Amino acid sequence: MSTGLRFTLEVDGLPPDAFAVVSFHLNQSLSSLFSLDLSLVSQQFLSLEFQQILDKMAYLTIWQGDDVQRRVKGVVTWFELGENDKNQMLYSMKVCPPLWRTGLRQ
Image 1 (cartoon, helix red, strand yellow):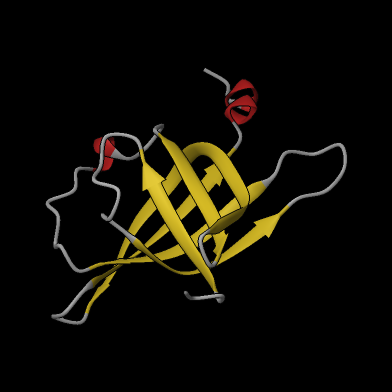
Image 2 (image 1 turned 135 degrees about the horizontal axis):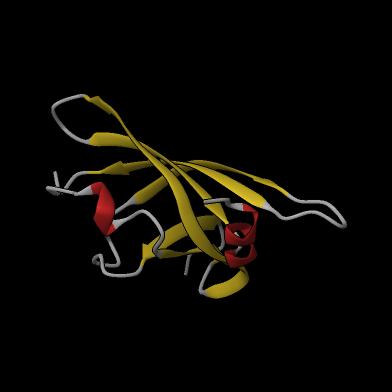
């Protein structure tokens, strides 16, 4: 049984193992919306259309062993393709709470 921390990310409409979390930074404070910046890799070389990811719900889960320590749920507000090292693709993603949408103007 593993007791170390591990991090998983699921995005609605994609396979649960589409991405592996390389790193993340969660910025949160009282009286403001959180923002979650993620660095991700995929070895599946998915033919991702950004429309498949943007504005979808994403779920970061922090595990210790088999126990969930924390879940962060929000909307994908930014997604960027990074480097391809011939073994995997690097991506960057930003996740914000659904209330973030109320700040958008038409």
